[in-house]
Length: 111
Image 1 (cartoon, rainbow, N blue to C red):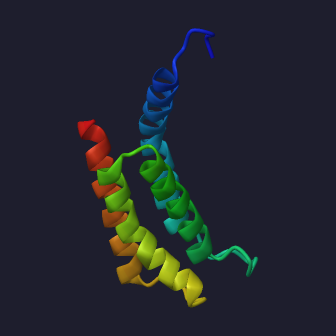
Image 2 (tube, one colour):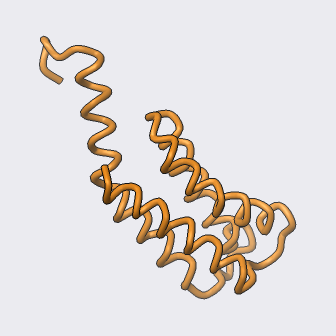
């Protein structure tokens, strides 16, 4: 951080890094959706996706990317429900999450 850098400049740089890194992070969620179920019951696929989506949606909200956040929350709700219910992600759940990821990626491409 440069000594003359303002708070607003630091926030702008953080927002830029988030958006630049978001496609790779969205791809990581997509990749995790297609992994086989882990043997560790503490880190089920639903829990992993829930955690990843929660992190992305929270960061988008904090950085005031509300349109990205809105897209991600659609998939987050599905992953959260599956995780809280200790169930696996259904085919429909995966489809909804993939659509949310694609929508978020579409928003990023416009920024």
